[in-house]
Length: 382
Image (cartoon, rainbow, N blue to C red; front, side):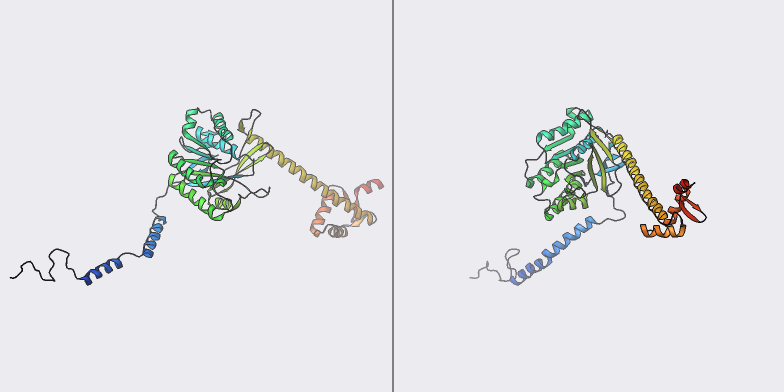
C-alpha cells in the first residue's frame, strides 16, 4: 500500500529545510566576504576622525572667550589649557588668589572678569589643609563676598594626600559635578609619577586638553621653573609639553616684597604686567605704583652708572692724550696724536679725531700754530 506521507527528497516539507548544503556554504562565505575586515574597520574609523577634524571655510567654530582680562588684554581662554610658572616661594598662590577674587567679584585691581558669575574649581596638591583654607579667607577678605556666594561658586579641594594615580579621575569628577568655567591646579606635577616621564607627560597634557574642550572650561596649571636663577623653563618633560600646548603662560617674579605677574608666552595677545604685595596688615594690595617707582629708580640708577662709566673712560682717554703730548715735548700735530690714540686704544682714525675735536671744543686741549697743546700747560706758561 502506497504511503502518502513520503515526500520526494528534493522537496522540503517546511520552509528552509532541505536546502542544498553547497548553497548554504556559499551563502555563509558570501556574507563573510561582504563584511568589512578589521583593517577596513580601522581605516573607516580613522576616516571618520578626519571628517570630524577637518575645517572648511563654512565650518562654524566657537569664538574665543576669555576668563579674565588685564587692561583689555584677555587671558585664560575657555576650552584651552594655560600655565603659571615661577621659582619656589615667588608668589604663585598669592597671584592665583587675586585671579579668583577678580572672577568672583568681577574685578580686582587691574584684573577684570570676562564671565558672568563663573564657577571655579581649585585643586591644591602642595599645601596643607590649613594653608589651603587661607585661600578662601584671603579671597573673601579681598572680594568682600559672603560665605554663601564663595562656597556656591568656588569649589576648593585640598589634595595633597591623594595619590597621583587617582588625581586625574578626581579632577574629572569634580569638573563633571561642578561644571566650572575655570579650573586651577596648583601643583600639576603631582599628577604624574615623575615630571621627566615623557610618555606620562604627553598623556596628561592630552587628557587635560580633552577635558577642557569637552567641558568648555579653562584649565590653569601651576608648575615650578628649573632651579637655576637664569633658567625660566618649567621643569622636565611635563614643563616642555605644557609650554608647547598652553595658550597662555604667565610667570611670577618676586623682588623686594613685590610680586609681579608677566606674560612670558601667549598664542594671541600678551597680557600687560601687574603687581601685588602684602601690606603691613598682611593683606594683598595693588603694587603697580610701587613697581613703577622701582622701575623708574632702576632706570635712573642705570643711567647714572652709564654716565659715570663714560666719564671714567673719557678721563682715561684724556689722561693718555695728555701723557702723549708731554712725551712729545708739550706739543704734537693732530694727525700724529690721532695715530698715537689709535694704537693705544685700538680704535679707528675717525674715532680718535672725534675725541680730539671734542677736547678742543671743551678747551681741554688747545691748538696753536697747527700743534696740539695741553690747555693747562699753556695756562701755566702764560
